[in-house]
Amino acid sequence: MSDLPSGPYNLGNLYAALGRTADAERQYRRAAAIDDQLFMAKANLALLLAAGGRVPEAETLLREAHALQPGQAGISFDLALLLAEEGKRDEAERMLRAALAADPRMAAAAFNLAVLVGERRPSEAVALARKAAALRPDEPRYAWTLAFFQSRSGDLRGAAQTLEALLRKHPEHDDAVHLLAEVYARQGRSAEAQALLRGRATSPPR
Image 1 (cartoon, helix red, strand yellow):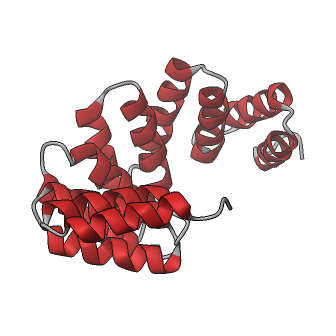
Image 2 (cartoon, rainbow, N blue to C red):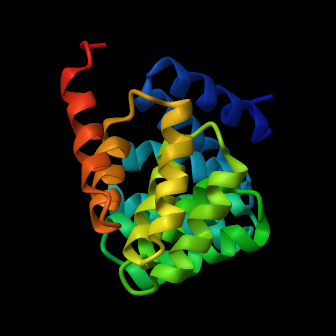
């Protein structure tokens, strides 16, 4: 099957899984050379190159893959993360919105978009983080981020409720404890904040 793109593409995936990055790169390039429209070969090669620090090459490949499949949520998302890493925040935001439009249930896109816009638009960040947390209730980082933006936007009651629910599920979450203590203090509940922190300080190590 060496004349078909699926052969080297699948071999590239296998080599990547085995950590044989040079072999994986060679096979992905073979697949793309056979079929320039095989967007997943370019996308997977881009991720491989980005992991190896070859970011400009990775960006070029992801842009090519996105041009071939602009409605593919995963590619929009991967390109957005790469752009954000390079400091291209406006374009990263557009790509994250494109990913969410293509797949409204992509919790990671909602979460990363919340983080990206949070400083400028905290109320939108709350809505996005709430969406991410609802889609992935098993991911404590999403609930913590929701509480963080609730607190920042002045919804202390909502932040406290989110953090209390988070700590019922994940009592070991130190960041949630400290943020909840801060929220309690801002609510004038200093005794509860101090008790919370004392309890954490005297908890046996896990």
